[in-house]
Amino acid sequence: MPAAPPPTAPDLPGASAAKRQQILEGAGRIFAAHGYEGASMSQIARDAGVSKGTLYNYFDSKAILFAAFIQQCACEKLPRLFETIGEERTPEDTLVGIATAMIHLTTSPLSLMLNRIIVSEAATFPHLAETFWQVGPQKAIGILADWLTARTREGTLTVPDPVLAAELFYTLCQTRITGRKRMQLPVDSDPDHIALIARAVTRMFLNTFQTGKGPPVPEPHPHVTA
Image 1 (cartoon, rainbow, N blue to C red):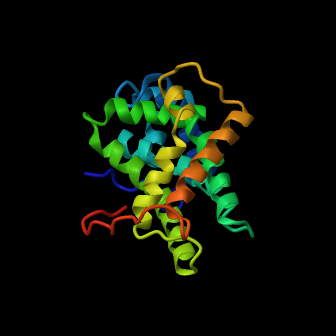
Image 2 (cartoon, rainbow, N blue to C red):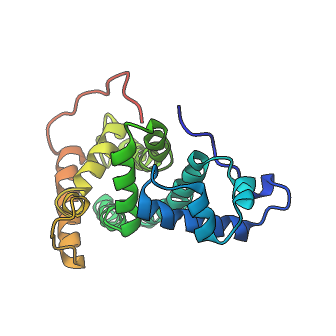
Image 3 (cartoon, rainbow, N blue to C red):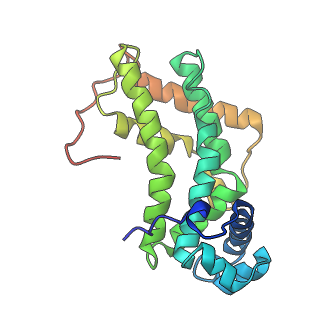
């Protein structure tokens, strides 16, 4: 079962947005150092500089606190992925911008830490993976799928299954640099190399979905959704 939605500060008597943020920052440090299972509410309270009672006034459980933490991360980071969508750009330039931002995001220390926690503890705490998927990847896939749908309607692209296409694009973005970073292997992650990967991903994607290019793509399976 997915974790319950995290409470927001205005829902709590005498709640302080600054205090809530203080707790979330402390939680982030403890989760990074100890993972999810190894982190305790007592450790988080000490790191955040609040009493355990104050911590529980804001978050009823560690699961709800973790959900709030990843939700905040998603709200801060996701908009940066799609800055090029609102600009007057060609589909190629738009996708290169998204791919570049995606590579930077997935190789950031925060993303690497969250990926490590989710992968290592998903079997024991499946609600963590579900929560992460809902507030992060699923939202990103939906935003790109909507953009692909609009480009298909105007005739610029031909994308029979926008959700699948969005998933393919994000998977391509994790080629080479992200995959190696997640395994802590040495890899060239300077801006020029990131730009090279972003352009390669975009060219491969457009070779399939740009109108008049590439082989026909199967119609979407009726049971596949974001």
